[in-house]
Image (cartoon, rainbow, N blue to C red):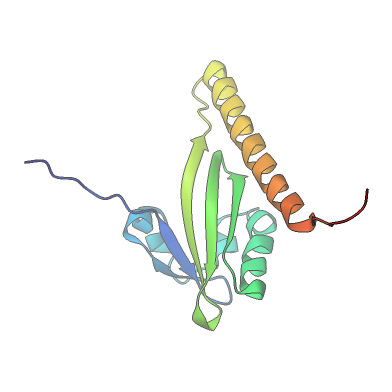
Length: 139
């Protein structure tokens, strides 16, 4: 008899003032002790990278998905607005820089940059698709 364990993606819920108000089981170790704290106070330098995306999700009322590098990690973040201005953040780690040796740093940095390039290309294509329109007629 085989037993499968479903691994849940880590998630955090922020209130309208970007305070951590809920933490999923997979994120408990890192974010559990931070409940009640402002996200930006806990992760210096992250506000300029993440907040514009979070604000866009809240303004539009639609989820926003993006890839970001922060503190040695490349992650895909899904920011989904919830009632009352709250925001649910779910992420998947795509790469982690290994700084043990210069060789490993170089290798993992190359992989991270490749991932960012692929993701950037996909997001650029999505933007181009939204602004291009087919116009019928002409010769």
